[in-house]
Length: 467
Image (cartoon, rainbow, N blue to C red):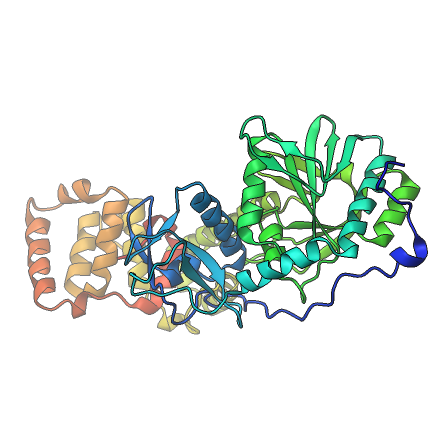
């Protein structure tokens, strides 16, 4: 047994527990994540130069926001920020509000010259950071370092095991002192114990260091659940392929018995419609994990791969529905004796993708789709005309509210020049010019029915964004 590594002590170790945490309010799925009235209301995207409302940047997807939060902090540390305050140009980063699961942008530096003042009350990040040092040297923290070393020592896959060694980076010239360092199959690994909270800047700095030095940073928790998770837990979890690892007295005892490093692994799985499941748990051996130093991730369940697979499956289901609906619309079944039954079936299928169709078939705007399908197929679709330009004249004369989307489709599908060549030369150009003048005088008759936009967006994703 190495010096500083004491044997497993059943009576005392079984009583070691992390500090009791208050339940944390979680964001409501689908609701905006930005504060309602933030000081910084707009930020500039440094890549595009566009000024964006913070509500647009933060969106409603908590998983994406946690990953963006890490990326923003990482780039800010490198002196190449992703966002700057639209008013003063100072780099900004994402913080959580103190009393609610809402987020805001804060200036990296603030001297009072910007009208947007963000350095008032402490954010939840700063409150958490002040608690970090106290937990860093708690009895449980020291014991967990011992536990990890014990587990690594009995697992023959690890070598060069040490507590709090000086890890000097030959590439960066900087130093780190991880809680535990070991070499696993030639890969240097830093194990860090996460008991209370670690400031996001610290997490980002360590990730950068070990990535540049060809090592891997693995965070270990004493507990991990949904109700009591803190921001720092989510910063690690959502940037580690939605996997987290727990070491406690039970996993240590199991590791010593099995003579391999066992961890309580926690992960989530993607679900249809976006978001993810609740937490899954399973004890896994470290050698079963997938390790990726390039992304600084260690995981049991490949969330991103499952998400891509699920996305492909959902997209295939969407495309099947689009194809079925187009075929049905183009067939006589639209008017057949079973039309109402088929319509009810389609309504249910569309609703699975959050697209609402009218309750009754008679309320459906079929002419809108016939003109869009005509543009898509480069021929009159579902009607007796011979040329696409005839469809254009029909829309111009009796369906002006369809004209904006129809002409948008004609351009997107590359039908404009061929359509101009159809029919009497110059007739469509003249008619379209008259319509443009009419639009300039009174655009209201040309405004599409926006209640149908979700349906059109679903059926014709290649036309997005719709005008």
